[in-house]
Every structure is written in structure tokens, then in C-alpha cells.
Image (cartoon, rainbow, N blue to C red):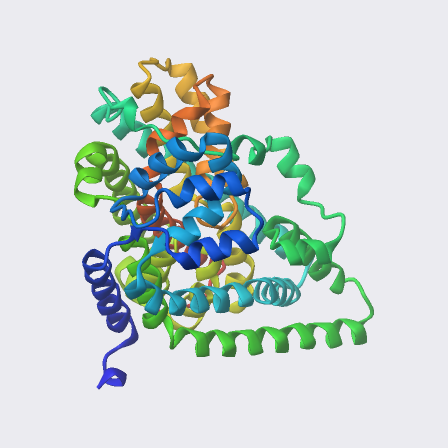
Length: 471
């Protein structure tokens, strides 16, 4: 029976069931004998373990309540030192642990495909493009599209956040401490310098997408400069590798409903009181979702209809599987194999266009992230009672654009990049703690927008190159 249901309906059913399952089996935190055995093996300070034993048997319904209790017993310094292990060992949700492994394996499978897929697709795409002038023209169109849509997204966010002013009267007592964001912050100059890898194999191991793309572009370009026999041999080899990677992708896609069920039910179960969260941050969340919705439903389809001369509704139907996966995983990088498959197989974009535009888009075209960063920065300013002038808001626009390019295609990278914007306009970095509680939920919406924008770009650019598509 399950095989007769189309895959996108299977994924949607899995998503709904996961939300229900996560709401029924919410996570609690408690210490057991097993927790203390683990602490002993990891050589945690005996005094700290002794204080934690005082809490054995207590069951905490919310993560926030649990963390506050831990800090009051062992002190903030010890909590920061052993935070990950303490939360890991206190985590108690057998019903979620029984299914979340499916999500972990699915994400690992997708991440396993990313680097060989990007490398083979970009190199084969460039060799199929042909000349350097063709590559330059395609590169100019791609970058122009990315910058245009990102600016449109940021301006949309800026208009709505000024209209609704969700930060006015925000409760600063709900601010959470965010560790390590400042250390991860990089300037635009550092991002540009780091594009060139010291060691390409280290870049592969670290999953450094900008460096991998730089190497693939360079390698593909110089394949066109070697002797005809070597050129043909290398082109055939990378085309063959790309074909194999797409076959593996098609195999992994079959497990998407199970993977999404495992991922989403854990995300929902781990959220502290969802009703209180929505009540407290509802206007902020609503502003972000409405702005993303306008960009997703109005701006991008209009660009596709009038510039690309394509049918946005038909393309949306073709993109249902990648969009649902992007929403569930919050990772445009992990969704890339599915996006490439849908854009090529369903919408009919040629490999030479999709293999160039999509890997690049998954790394530097972050419309949803740019829009979100802009609204978040303005929300923090409003919450702290700082009135940003027009000049400051223009700085926010350009910093958000640059920060979104530097945001890696991984969950919560946008949170790190918000600190860049806050620094640029002199806002307190601890303001990020105000939005932390809802970041993971909003990450799902903005990642979906990022992937939709990448796919629309592929279609628009393919049409501008004279391709006949299925949309």
C-alpha cells in the first residue's frame, strides 16, 4: 500500500506523524545510576559528581529548569565545562531514542553524498559548459541572481520588522547565554582568504564548502586547457562519478519518510513548553514567517514567471520532496542531492546548469537566512530600546547580504552570522540569546526558502540559456 502513495505524500504524512509523536512523548531530564557510571568513566571531578548525586531521582520537565538547577548546584563554570556530557546523560526519552536513530542515519547518508556530489557535479558541469567565456557568462548570471534575490529578501524583512516592531516590549528576562559565537565570528576579509584552502584534503575532511567549490571550479576550468585525450578522459571520469552519485542519491531518497520522522519527532519532543514559547515570541516568529512567506510565495514565483518565463506552480510540485526535506533537516547542504535530482529529473534543467548553480547556491545563496538575520538584528535593537537610523539600517542590509554568503549550509550557522551584523551596528552580542529559543524552529522555514530560491535560480538561468524545460 505504501508504495502506491507518492513519495511526497509519504514524506508529508511522516512529518505530521512526527509532530504528533513528538508532542505526545516530550523529553524529560533525570540522573540514573547509568549516568553516574558514565561520569566515573569520563573522570569528572568527584566534588561535581557528588553535588549532581543530590539531584538523582529528580525529574525535570523542561531543559531550562534542569539547566538552572544544575548551575545552582555545581556553579556556572563547572556547568560550562561539563555541559555536553551532563545534558547527554540526563536526557530521558526512550520513545524518541527508539526512532531518532533513523533520522541520524538519514542525515549521515545525505552528508556522505555532499562532497563527492559537489566535486563531481561542478567539474563535470564546467567541462560540459565548454569555453571560459561560457563559464564567465553563466557565473555572472548566477551571482547576479543570488545578489538580487538576497537583497529583495532582506528589504522584505526590513519593511515588515519596521511595520510590526516585534521587539518593542520584549521580555529581556528570557535571554539565554550563547557560548562560542564570538569565537566562530569571521570578518568578510577572512571568509574571502579562507576560500583558498591550505590543503584540499583537509577542506574535504572539514566539509569546507567554499574551499571545495573553489578547488572544483579551478580543476574543472583547467581540464578544458589540457590535451584533448586527457580532457576527454577526465571529463568522462567525472561524468561517470556524477552518474554514480545520482544513483546513490535516488537510493537514499527512498528512505526520506523514515529519516524525516526520526529527525522531526526529536526536534518537537526536545522543545520546552511550545505553547508558552509561541505566546512569548509569537509576534517575532510571525514576522519572520510572514516575510519568508512573501519571498517564497510572491517574489520568487514572480521572478520565475516574468524573467524565467516558466510556470512556478509546476516547478513547486516538482520540488516537493527537497522542500519537505529542507524543512525537516534545516540543512540546505544535506538537501542538495535531492534538490539536484528534482531540478534535473523533474523540471528538466540540464546537468551543466544545475551542477554549476545548485552547489554554489547551497553555499552562498541564503535568501531565507539573510532575511532572518535582518529581522533578528532589528528585533534585538528594538528589544534593547536602540533606535536604528536609516544609515544603520542600510548597514544592516549590506552586512546581512555579506553574512548570508559566509553562512555555512549547516543548521544554526545563521545564528553565528547575526553576531557580525550586531557588531557592525554596535548592538550587544548577548542579544542573540533572546532569539535562541525559537531559532531551531525558524531555521526550518528559512532553509526551505533557501532551497526554493536555489532551484528557482537554476530554472531562470536555464531558460535564459535557451533550454526547453518541463516547467
